[in-house]
Amino acid sequence: MTPYQALWLSIGAAVTTIALKWSAAWVTGSVGFLSDALESVVNLLGASFALLMVTYARRPADPGHPFGHGKAEYFASAFEGALIAVAAAGILYAAGERIAYPEPLHTLGVGTTLSVAAALVNLVVARILLRVGHAHRSLATEADGRHLMTDVWTTAGVIVGVALAGWTGWYWLDPVVAILVAFNILREGGRLMWRSFHGLMDAALGADDIGQIEAALAKLEPRGVRFANLRTRRSGADRYAFVEMHAPSDWTVARADEVASAAERAVSDHEIILMVRVLPDRHAK
Image 1 (spheres, rainbow, N blue to C red):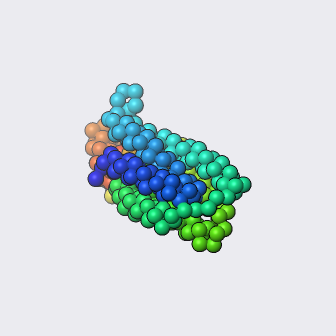
Image 2: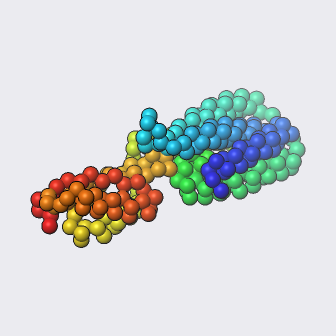
Image 3: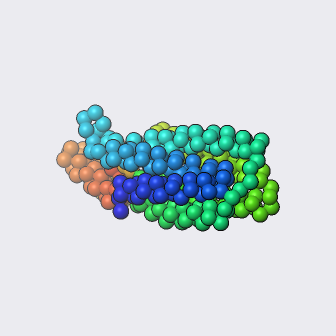
């Protein structure tokens, strides 16, 4: 499955869970269930924007964007983080009113069943999104999957809290659960925003990727060259590396180019784009 297909699945799941959770909130009158439904609205908007950005990010490089459009995925994470902040504000407002004016809850059995069904839908789709996002190195897809997993745990907490409120008659527990939901999704929104910021700052590749690059280059050094000043960066799903290749000063351009091309091919086996700068090394033999 591609990120494009996975995000369409996420949109379908969001529409389904919105219907289930809003129904749960309507039949019970629970502000806790209402807060959970608002988070599913965020899921729908976030998945829709992520789909747009993933589609744009997969466009090939052009003269105006020679390194491609991969960074567009980071905007999806930032957008979803901002949506979470708006949803949390709405939840806190609704919960504040309910604390001031508590109301009894109704037909909790039906509401709980609907919420459990919504959680199961999100659980299945979240696992698919995380698997596809990791396989394709799609930040937007992975971020959407992480948000859905947070939603699963949020729904579980809401179900427990609302059930306790109905069982004990302490109806103030219902808005307290909603407030906890708001702070939980704010935490997740902050993580998404941080990952987006980190990606836009041209973060280096992970230690495993760098180790693979160094191992591939080390196999070529016996041919008489020396590699130095390795730098890496990530742009959405694309990974880049830049390195200096010091070759003996008496080598021909063709000979140096042959080794540099071999280095680029060796690293490309790990789906990393390597760019080599050839420099003379008077000490190399």
